Image (cartoon, rainbow, N blue to C red; front, side, top):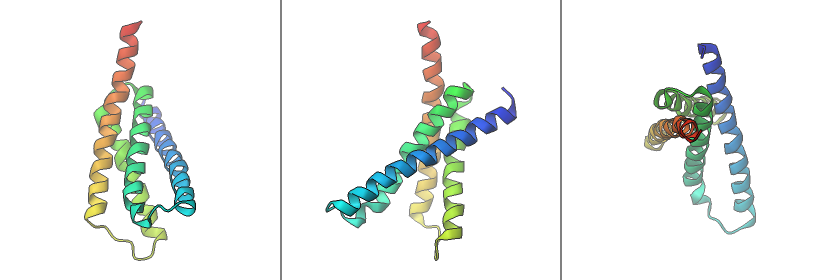
Length: 130
């Protein structure tokens, strides 16, 4: 697979991850607005939403790329969270990195690696069944 095609697949999977995040956060916003859920749950929910989105995105990318799930999946997680932080630093007044930010970066990269490994292995299991 060519490098350009691999980069395109990774970027597309990151876009899918952001779309999943958007949908999940919209559902959470509705729950927050119309139920008694406390606003103190926002950081935890955004953390979990980003992990789920990166996991799905990296798995999708590795199903298409079919190799180097650890590296490419970690790359999906890293780019996802770096773009998120660059946009936050541009649009959010007083944005700064703290311990929570660094843990979010680390966990997104790790979950991207796990999703990448699972995505590659899903393809291998399919080949074995045939």
